[in-house]
Image 1 (tube, one colour):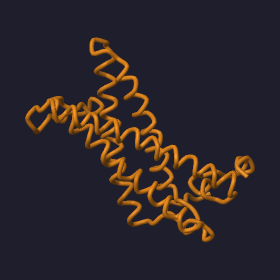
Image 2 (cartoon, one colour):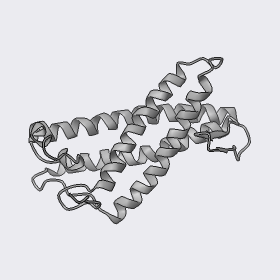
Image 3 (cartoon, one colour):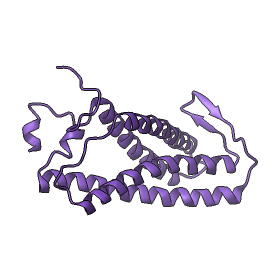
Length: 192
């Protein structure tokens, strides 16, 4: 069986599916690690590890997001089913572009908070990104607040995206969900 690399008018190709699922897993991991980091006291030996992992995953999401946007520009997504009402098309567009905007803004608010706190970012132990700006704790605190608000917004959009996919699959019984999954026999019968 050959791999379908590019999107078609009916389904997503392997590259789009890979970007989608890898970024989704990284977002969940980054959130869980961020929550664990917040619940860890500064004196705990895991504090720095959790901070480093959270920031590293955030930067990785940003890089993957940039490549994903480039890929989407040269390889458009399949169209929604023709019978989709205008207001649902509009909601889908707002959720998708909202997710994209949040995947872009969240890492920058986190990077900005670290740099303004005078903290370098260790990217998975491979290299360190030193803060290029003078320390400003007040700005760092504001950016942390922005980061938390953006995180909650991303989680809301993420949940709406998942619920909409499930609604399409189980209520509308269309191919919205399955075209992002590379499900082949024998598993296909379980998704109908």
